[in-house]
Image (cartoon, rainbow, N blue to C red):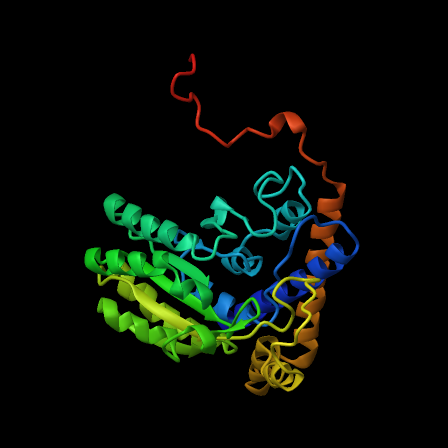
Length: 327
């Protein structure tokens, strides 16, 4: 792990954090329609996993997925424009917060359906196998999705066919407001890998370097034809399930949230690099300022962009020609 890579890890987690903080402001200002699920607190898990991939590898996200395209190298302008429903967005304003896709960096798509992306990632793994292109698909999902049928069906099939897929669970301990401990028969989701004869690994999701190491091993295993792995990153969302969501009954206490904030992935990596002499505090501040400028330009780009024309509503929905339609 080179110093340059470790600094890039820091850049990406800061980029996700500042982008999400800006999204929160844009939503409050009424510039973003619909619901928004922020990944503040998840940055170490997301960036560490994506940096273990090659440029040609693919990822599939979930409903809490602004950070995944950023971690894979997507430009911020198209993402912010998509959140605002603008035609310059990565999905031409038709996807929004929970359905970002950017094929230029290998982001197949994201889904508001719990567990909906897991079969897509498995299909991407099958495609890579058929094409023989040596690519790997990294599949992100939450703790709640690990109880969906799509999870078990996909892992079973991927294990049988030894598909090049890495299943990556961001376990933030809650499915919306339901504690994972109340709905899981096992304490650790990673142990479910045993049922499919594949490796299952648990990693500290707040430590970007630890996540990178574990994911890198799983990615190389998949690329060499040895099949899928299941990684469980223990992480935490610092905000509410969805931004602005009003919960009438408290389901987690303030002390718990504060304990996790003491393990902020951004601060952990910054402190590590400064103490190791890889970065100075001044340079770390400069990196933050540089990325803040990127985010500001992304917001400006999105605000200056036009909304899509109503006549384009059905473009890209169906392939052309549709069966029975005149050519």
